[in-house]
Amino acid sequence: METGLLVNEVLDTNAMTALIVCKNGTVVFINKTYLHILGKEEEEVIGKYIGDITPETRTLTVIKTGKAIVGYNWSINGYNMIACSLPLIRNGKLLGCFAYSLFMDIWDAKDLVDNLMTELNMYRDEVRNLHSARYTFAEIIGQAPNIQDVKILAQKAALHPSITVLIRGESGTGKELFAHAIHRASNRSRMSFIRVNCAAIPEHLLEAELFGYEEGAFTGARKGGSPGKFELANGGTIFLDEIGEMSLTMQSKLLVFLQEREFERLGSHDPIRVNVRVIAATNRNLEEMISQQKFREDLYYRLNVLSLDIPPLRDHVEDIPQLVKYLIPKLNVDLKTNVTSMSDEAITLLSQYNWPGNIRELINVLQRAIILADMGDDDTITTKQLCFMQVKNESGKTVSSHTLKSLIKDYERQILIKVLEETNYNKTKAANILDIDLSWLYKKLKQYGIPPDNA
Ligand SMILES: Nc1ncnc2c1ncn2[C@@H]1O[C@H](COP(=O)(O)OP(=O)(O)OP(=O)(O)O)[C@@H](O)[C@H]1O
Ligand SMILES: [Mg+2]
Image (tube, rainbow, N blue to C red):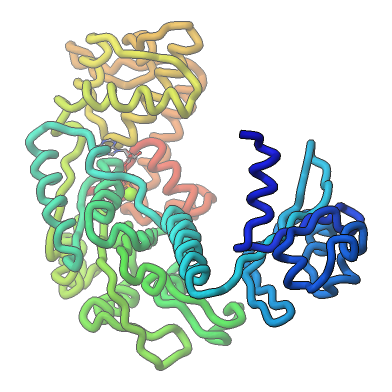
């Protein structure tokens, strides 16, 4: 069948009007249905300026802007239609505009609603991706019994979408990964997953961040106010990361929310009710903090409905081979490298290490090793590429490399630990002494796998 013929058939269907104007606004095509609606003959329209025929036309705007106008109401001579005006572009040059419209009878309207629903779902998916949990349980690697037990418990937690979950574990063990996976496996997965890092937001801003505010609530408050994270997470999950860093004042406010499931925006007295699951995480020893009166006991009980203790990597080193196998291809994608495997000796070396920074540190080590292997054109990582690691060898001696970079890093690491110990792990003080931002300090601690507390 000739395509040209088909196009004519399509354009001349009774169900729609069709019109093509060239870039100076003159009509080059109009179908019979549209002529009928306008009550005109073809020769009265072809070659004429469209603005003179239908002054309200959107086609001229499309020609001017080069941008499509989709799904607007087009009413003419008593016919109500839904129309689209699309730019016609060839080799990057605007040639004109194609406009068509569909009648709004009941069946058209149904189709229209269906189409709008498809579009709405598309936008919903987009928004969900923006506020979404990235990881699933399948991405939590580990066959060791201690990891498997936590996984099973977390999967159970996922099935109870209102239970508050407290995730505990050293830095880099996968607390955030578990929070994502629980959300993804729950029936809240289509709704938002909102993460709040309680350590990164200054105390005086955290309340507004969590509960939102009304216009004029404080100096600098945005016009029209702003919803807080609890509102944004409605229907979904809020992940309160580093909960141990929350001030006592905020802890009280959070407690009230957990009891009432209601809150007020700053500067408002209207209670807002939301349905969110709370997942909190910390690498701090909350029981010790309670005894030091740094963490509210009543909040602890509210949060600790179901507690997941993620084991440190040194307690499941048997998972290292599987982790390495899983992580190498992923890192290859990020680093644009082609390293394929790791030698048995190298795996043994990794299994002997203490991993203070846990799986995050393993990822860092693998990144460096992959880069070194790639630079040496090796497709297998051997102990040669792990020489930068400080691993105790059989005789108990620390083996380390002596490149300037690694020496500087070792020195930086030691300074961080020393200052933290001197300040009794008070991060704000430590950051002041070192004259760096608190967030930078946290970044460095993560980078070196130094736990931010002395637990
Ligand atoms: N079991 C696992 N399998 C695969 N990847 C993992 C696993 N656990 C952690 N990871 C990866 O390790 C990195 C650190 O994990 P995550 O951020 O969840 O740790 P965390 O416990 O929240 O650390 P922190 O206390 O420092 O915030 C992430 O890149 C994560 O994807
Ligand atoms: Mg984390």
